[in-house]
Image 1 (cartoon, rainbow, N blue to C red):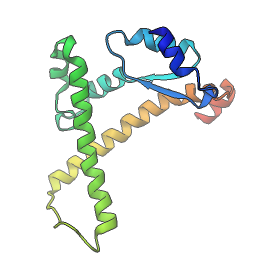
Image 2: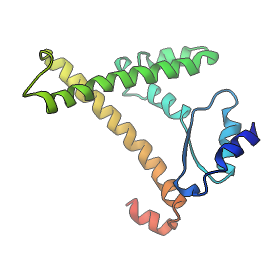
Image 3: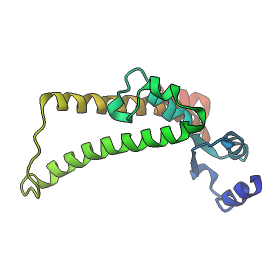
Length: 163
């Protein structure tokens, strides 16, 4: 396995431009450590999704599962639960963004009749988008300093940018 990973990464001479996103399975942390030991930036996805599901502001409508139910899932089935939750999250926001896109580009020539939406649905959509933006902002603030250092910026410069 280590030689296969090394062989996969070998052709990329510009390592600063290469970003790897890896979803770890049962043996994933060894692969993650190998990738980072070779000098590549590697984002491991499992903890992020897990923390998103367990977040105090997470709603079942976003992930299809509550934090309590996720914690109770058999460890052997957690990967499937995360995959299902990610698919549910993507479907939720795909509908939201598609609706916005259709409104912007097709309001003068609708292809389908407008769908009614209640005040409660609007409030839920707004809360869901605020939740997504806040989580993405948290992840960005955590990862950006390492990204700057990976590009060759010194710690003092990084600290000036992060103020």
